[in-house]
Length: 82
Image (tube, rainbow, N blue to C red; front, top):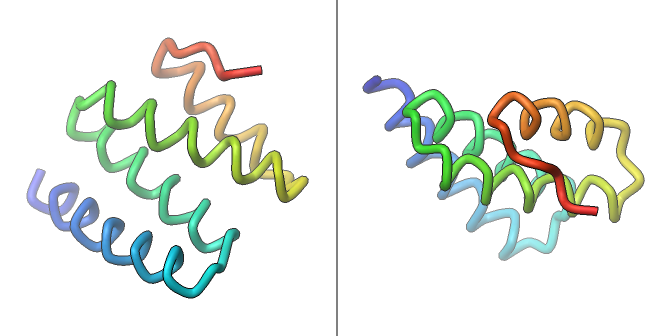
């Protein structure tokens, strides 16, 4: 559990830096890492919110990882938007 808490802290810093630099791909990857960390901590609401943000960014980029994120959302019992 300590590693997941640390991962959320690192993920938030990464998200902040990615947003500051304007790097959309890095922002999507930070959201994904945060979503998975929150899922590991059984924080479904936080996980779904982060993964939905990830999905939107990957879809905007036309990135192949959008399907992977849809699978994560499906496993969490969340219907991906769209």
